[in-house]
Image (tube, rainbow over all chains, first blue to last red; front, top):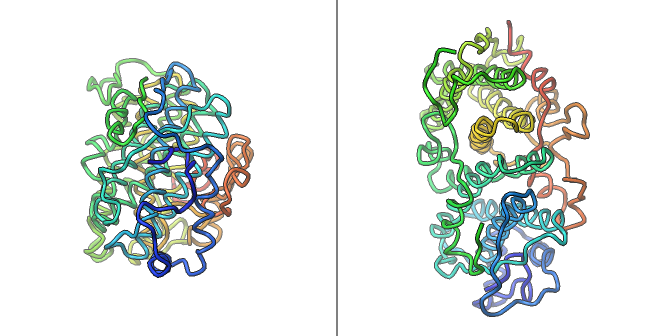
Length: 235
Length: 230
């Protein structure tokens, strides 16, 4: 278990220790020849000094009547997404092509940037690091990793779309808009990887007959992500 | 307004303020542009390879739906469909005979559409249901943009200002709007007053790709202008 804000005991300490050979293979597959330097820095970037909290963390309550509450809601979702890619990319994901892994790596970086941005923007108003749990996902295999990524990205899009009207500040609305379209680009990319050149990148399961993507209220989003978040969140 | 259908929770019987009507008509103009473009492209035999047809049929379906949706919301306040020239005065003379050109114009429309909706979001805050619908269209345009970029061999997201479009078009589609402080170029790495370089160890590529940038109406219309005859 690691904290959703990226704090962890050490970067790239994996559940299943990588041997030198398997680590070289991992980096080779990633197509990141000299990335032996890049990869640790990717995770170290966000490893603050917070110790990993063991046991159940304190509950978080979001007051969605305020912009700070809505931004913390976004921060919670970005913590979840970022932690997922950090966790997945510590494994050797079998069945992945190098371009697919490169897409995952980039998406993970974007989610980490979103998380760190919201954390910095919220400052002392930020909720604590959430404890996350991806033990239900087989992170060593391509399909479960990409299927779970699809759920997170689609849910992220729907969550931002549903939360936009809750914001009172135009500046925050534009910032949320700057993020949500990148989440939609991720969702389309993940979907295209799973089912290339099909209609799925913007499939009828997420876009309705009016050509509208999903918009979900926080009360509908939180149950969807609850299986992956140990920290109790209510709104 | 005579359309009594309630679309997406929006009741067209309720008169909309003029500033909202103006935003929606701006959106409708862009959707007319995209819808007509894909109707023509998908309807041109031999243009789109069979392998990619499902993608453009889906995009066409959505753009047609966006036009219908906005017409439903605007009712009698809707602007008429312009006449288009998708060669943009000859700049894209083979747009419907050369698939690569068609894809390039598609990407320009989609990435510009994302920026256009984003730039108008704050103008819709007084109408929460309309704002939500606009956001729902906005993310669909972003899905389209990502897919078309991938078909063209690019990443689905915008790294720096990379678009592989003709230089002048690329500069307009991914460049700054007016004022640039509010509508920066897509390679922007400062968000909400926070320099992203200072909060991660990443270089500018992932930092710029993590955020899409809005564009103002005048700059969007300047990009679309060469395609609109009247």
